Length: 378
Ligand SMILES: C[S@@+](CC[C@H](N)C(=O)[O-])C[C@H]1O[C@@H](n2cnc3c(N)ncnc32)[C@H](O)[C@@H]1O
Image (cartoon, rainbow, N blue to C red):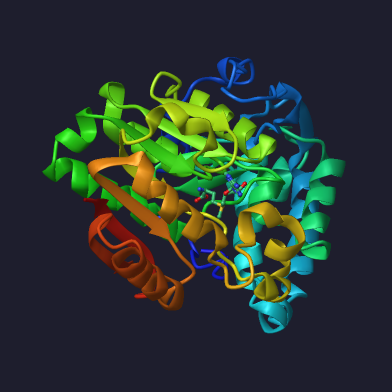
């Protein structure tokens, strides 16, 4: 997850072939989503002010001419092309082609254009140059956003305020981890399980520990439907707040509940009752963090990345908690840094926690890396 920051060269993953327009159709309108702050179960309340509305949800209250937009596009494109392979060679960062693709996506989110071709007007001839286009930010801010992308290596997802993940468009901002494509597999595995075993869907609560943007909780909540219940926890107030925003946008507030606190701490009443537990906790060894891509190390929250000396601190904590919180037969799936951590955890669960779990396995991600550990409570 963390090390491969740009594995996807298309904005819509393989699970999301529909264009942006269609995907936004089943979401609540903006007016519903920004007034969302219902109490989140937590010791401290979360303010709506902390939420940054994604660009594509902002009202198009500004305007500019096609000529001005073409000037911006040319400027931003040549800045992107000037990067060449520099970031790639430096820290495996994005090369110019990807930056140019991001530039197109930024323009699509910023302008109000034709639904199936939002930036089509940029290919019109000079005779149309004075035509006005409606915008969601002012031109000055648009220039500033692209400077941040290139000069500060601010992640594209924080620039536009969202990430396309599975069939979702999730709001993200500084302080919240950008969900990664490989984590989508966790939802696929849960889907496979509940299709085979209806009781996993109907009997008991599902939990997502360290929910971040709410990606896993929302993905699973949509699978469970109205009969399901998912509790998602996070220690970070900003993550809890953004997750709640995303839950509301997908109208899942009766299915997914966000609780602020450390791992199992906000879940006391569910001891021995959890039917399914998913978690993608921080798992990067502390010493590896400085070497990550600038986008990650400079901008993503350390709380979401740092898993202690060998990256296993939180994973081991969660394994131990799983033994007392899962009900007999309950399922778990954890994401790890790769083969070394997965192998260690499989041994730990089978040997050091002997008698607690069964059918413990490691499962590969899209790249064939042993990324996940799964199993069942005995
Ligand atoms: C790697 S991120 C995963 C976020 C999200 N589940 C995803 O897959 O995109 C780990 C998350 O764990 C949260 N976290 C870190 N320490 C925690 C703790 N002690 N209790 C609960 N959540 C914690 C971080 O705030 C972050 O949101």
